[in-house]
Image (cartoon, rainbow, N blue to C red; front, side, top):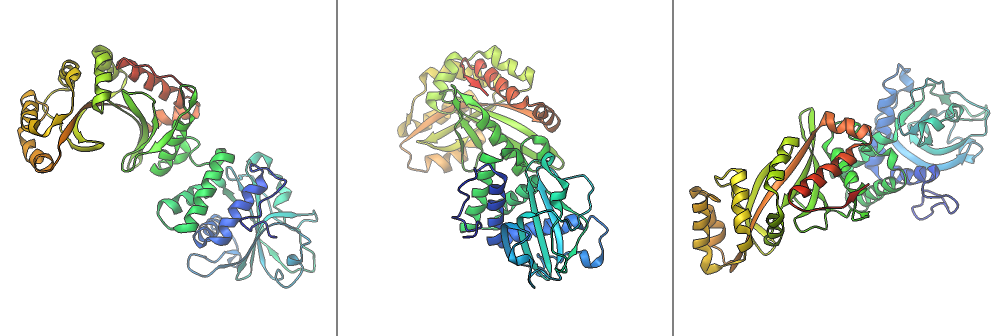
Length: 434
């Protein structure tokens, strides 16, 4: 049975073996049209960088001028496919895929070695692509890029090797999913392959460092998730979840700041990485936060680059209803709730009018907020409200700062330090490690 049958994995090769990587990727190429287009367009575009003869320029599969006939893996040069009319007269392209693109000049030519091809793709009109997979570029033996054909088989070998990067391939696969170019089983297969890469070949990811994400927000955020997952909280791997409509976050196991979020923002050619810590965002969390909060230490966070802002809102059960900016400075806001947080409790329906009047009197809300309060709360049938006097501690790394720290393998260390300092400012401790 062909190893490109989804259910016919290798029995004697580990998941991290390079042949298993080849097999799983070629399953996608064989079965998913959008992946065929992506891969063969990468090959075509790479060879367009060289001054090839006209008859060596590959037709575009995206325009329908090229089509895949057969995809196979681990075929020796003596296989019957390479002896008959199926191969005769074809133009042969040698493809090498490694972590980074091979930058050594070499001439592809027929070789007498006993070749075994990691991947073989027959395409119409008259092309044969042989694929060599070397996840680590330093392991490439240049003769492996040469095909081996019998003299009587009339093939034309393109002398220019086609060198691709796994990171580019995986980036394109992420883009296919991100742009919703696939659905159903096709989407699931690609996502499974990406997860397989994460577990077995994580060094091939295009988000192993911020610098290699090239300002792509999707990849930057994937890098943020990887960093959160690399943290240990109380000696255990951080549990990272996604809050729909918000961000990826790690569960802190704390009452004061329940979620540790890390994400990116991109504006033109500029990007940044942001740490978000929402403190006191429920009544229970607020009581824990304000009872131990050190106002001086909290204000000192601004001296090391943190931005602090209020996040006052009201909620019903677990649903947040309205946010208010008010007119208080951040310092006034903190001092107010430092005094009043011990009396926090759910407010009953008959108390709503007095409640919102007291907020306006104290500067928590503004007179112009009344119409929204009326529309969103008073006109509804809420029988009670929760008061959530939270605030945000946000730290931002510029692209230059994040890239330099990550290249030195120090970003995670810096992230952990910033989180610990923030927790200390609110009188809490969190046990973080790598």
